[in-house]
Image (cartoon, rainbow, N blue to C red; front, side, top):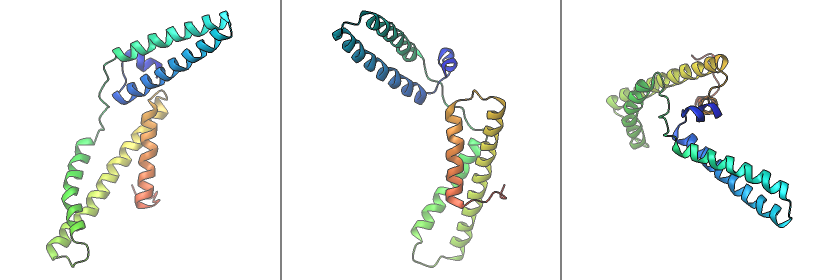
Length: 166
């Protein structure tokens, strides 16, 4: 992550997270400096002051960085299109609770399962790419790994564990 910060390749969320962490560190150092001053530990005060100045420099560096947009998925456009197609079907399904559907509504709602399956295939493809990338480049951001884990949790939670489905 330090290399990404030095190169300015962090997203807005990562920048905010890092700025908060540095601010917390600065607050902690200030309280430790105050304690060491009261205890008259000159050497400790010098060390803590040096650490605080480095933290201040890091915070200034972080604040100067203009965040990069998150990297888009390979199939993001397809997934968006499918999700837009899915919205009216979900509304139709919600409005049809407790009544019989017409033949047209039933055939329209049958497309919902096809769309969900297609979205799942595209997301699984993307998660496999992440796995491959992590194997090749272990220095990838932690956010990619977290996305991968959350994606699989979502898939297994929503449809059950079906490893044979591709």
